[in-house]
Length: 151
Length: 250
Image 1: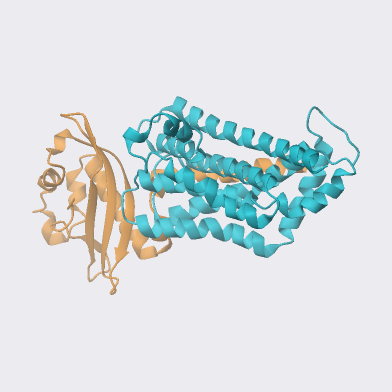
Image 2: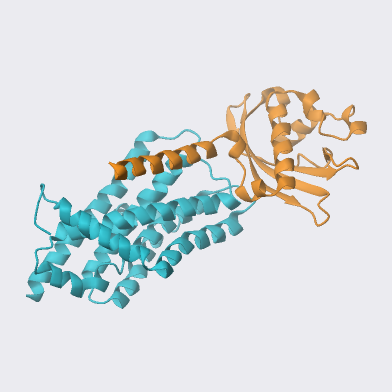
């Protein structure tokens, strides 16, 4: 009886933990999750791609420095990256492949793998996206949009 | 240890032998530590190589092969190293199925621990595609099949040094007869037949299904079934080899 309960507990704990790992928020290497700064930029990167996934370009521009937000042309950048107009782009899911901070811990780059479908051709692609971040004087992470979104 | 046999397996004997075997493992922290170190070390190497890149089929092949490797290495000395004890206990009616089952049962538990360490170790560096519980299940099935292969080797030889020496002999062909190494045109005739009998082929195939965008569930069941089937055949062969050696030596 005790053995059976123990086995059940092991199965439940293991299954539960693995199920948690299947959640979109957990699609990040553990090494990234263990560093608070890297976790922060990885999280911001995920949120940025989520905005693009839901075609909320205004929200996506918010990650840029204040003075660049108005001029940020995200649809154009997306077109440059995926070689397709944003309306034909269906970002199905994405995961953080890696995140690195520089020696000053004021610059970061995050590499993401995206799973996209081109709606005009039904083609499935897995482009990698690099996002570059800089820490502002206030301590907030801001995306360097001009250098980001490179394949 | 009275022989209270239910069917072909004496469960009382299996239970007693498994408890003793487990206690032996627990009393040997060095071996247990090495057992835990193995998957972490391999996962770290794979992680360092593939970190920051898109996981590809080579990575998945290495992971499935490593799982089989862990199982095989864990088990390859476990029967031969205590052959003298086993022969003495045979005089008081220890049954071969119970003996093999006790080994397989304890090694399966340790293999589960290794599988979890291996998966978590990989996830430290990488994001692995596929549903994690299924991914772990496939790796674990590979460990189980590898354990059966290791036990068979252990039953076959007369010294643990020879058993260790045979591990690469059975594992390297798993690499050589894999689709990643062989060009497609070579996969015909006996080569194709041999490929079907390798554990690595089925482990890799199952992982491919798990990480696919649109998994073919029937293929997954087939591959896991093949791994478990081959494992069961190897366990049966282990028991028969022990019996055959007994008759031969008499």
